[in-house]
Length: 272
Image (cartoon, rainbow, N blue to C red; front, side, top):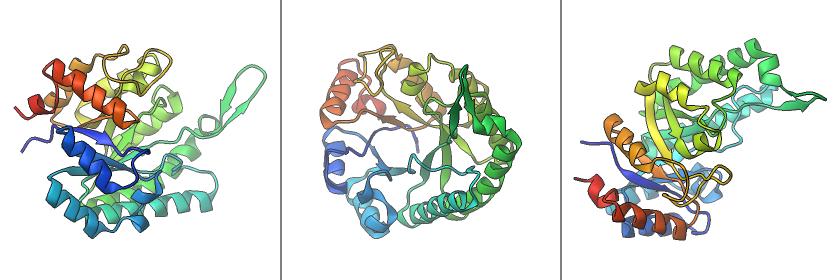
């Protein structure tokens, strides 16, 4: 069964799971990415049984976006352990809810502003940064394997940074089940400086986020910026992976799907 499908993120303007499911079905999409930054999509606010029922009734697939503030390398043990506990709780909930993929931003850390530059503390203390990640991901990936969940690291404009690149390379080398989410829109906003990471690790791409960018503003309606939308969809088909159309409002999502349909690239074409 093909894993290539077009999907959407949960919309902040919509109040609950059901309204997002209704929008996805109305547009012919096949996936909804739940975002834990919104309280109604945290494990304590959404029983796993309710999500399983929604998947069964709607035919949709669900993925999870872990909170953006997660930092599994913090120099403060209590913060690091609390963030790890949050991730593991979410991974176990994914297993119960039949969510097979969880998306995670890799934190770049704090920087100090010096007269001539920014000093990124994780870069300055690289061995500690890598070691903290090593310990955290050993526990996280064990939980993911136990619960049948794929963990994906998303670029989010950070993979151009040398210390983050080193961390990504280390983690991919240690954990063969770890995958990458290529957010193409954020890469465009970064001047495509993150692309080499994904070219190097092409076989580890497990998820794609697609939105347009005009060089200043990301999360634009598709075909209003400099992202090659058709090429991104071709890559997703070649890798047999899902694509989240990561615009932020129902109106911009509806318009993006309309523009895809006009070009024969929409949800109906994706099923052929």
